[in-house]
Image 1 (cartoon, protein in one colour):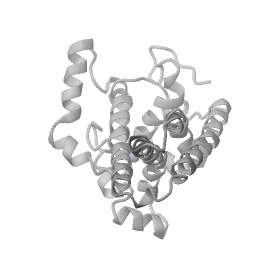
Image 2: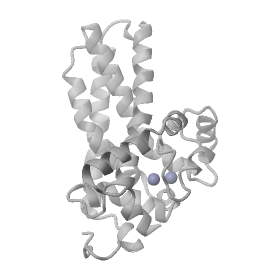
Image 3: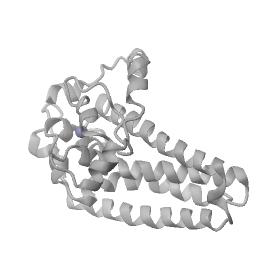
Length: 240
Ligand SMILES: [Zn+2]
Ligand SMILES: [Zn+2]
């Protein structure tokens, strides 16, 4: 277990600690994710001509864009407000964010389970909810498609993020990055400059410029600081 005295900043070793329990839970999450995503796809595909509907492709695209927004919002929230000492979420979910700013290449040495497990765990309940929708109704199948693309995009996020940090990515990955279907390395490098407060979206990065331009996260921070009295990025700033 990750154990930290409240007054000590977490050490580099503590941040790199990936426990056996966390690995087991992540593995379960990955199995559950693929089973649930496969079931949603099969249920959606059981409707004849479903992928010939233009709105269906609109829903899939909206889900993929939604994943980029979700990645940015969650990344911002964990970087800015939570702590590795936050109960329940700290060890499993916040720790990798803190480790990543201290050692950005650590992610390139993490295996498939460590990279992708937490996002699979987070999306399983959404996929189960999608399974309860009725693909026989137009609204039901559009929402199913949206949620499926959203969850597939969220699942891909940490893998895309890892690829953005590889010094020599495989050719297929370079193609995806050049086509802007996956997060680009140069684009993402803008996040890795102190104080780590911009370009939070890490699925495709499509929304980074619009969100930075309108000051989306700064406005949220002002609101949260006003309501709670907390300062943004306290733990992250102490570590980096
Ligand atoms: Zn970050
Ligand atoms: Zn990164």
